[in-house]
Length: 125
Image (cartoon, rainbow, N blue to C red):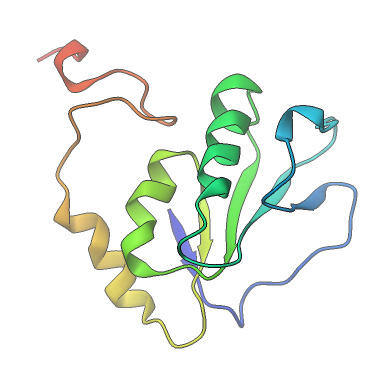
């Protein structure tokens, strides 16, 4: 997962990059020509964008960039990655190096995810 600061993030007004409100149904989108979707986390307690990411990756086959924006905290990053989000825009004041260390805490997962669909037991030893 690519982690960027709020200063590095630029909202793009282009047909190839769209911002999806967290109450919108991704299944209603025309994804032809779209290369980036910004998913919104208005509060860290609102997880609807996780479901949107999973739908976009697994059911709709979206292969472009999924970017988490808004109230993004360090402890959300692993779950964001597992649901298919590629880029996280950290909220103001969050240390990017501390955020990257979050991924070192988990060596693996027993269950599959939107990114790695095979569960641990189904992988060849």
